[in-house]
Image 1 (spheres, helix red, strand yellow):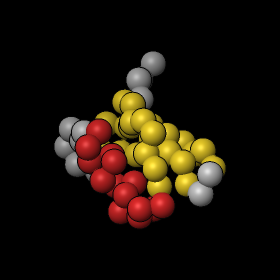
Image 2: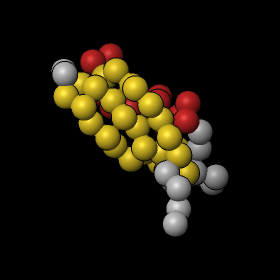
Image 3: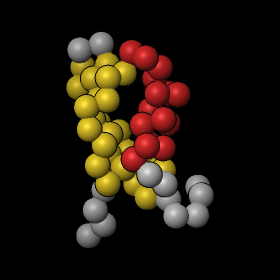
Image 4: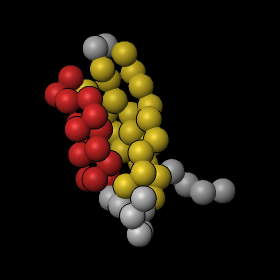
Length: 54
């Protein structure tokens, strides 16, 4: 975990299945990059939102 990291919720579609996954990253761009590295081109990212702390 790096300094300034936040939790992002990524909504994606993999092989016709909708999935949500929490990713720890500094920015939404880093969260997208993490998902692409993990799942490759088969993951279609629909949205990336910062998880609010309550």
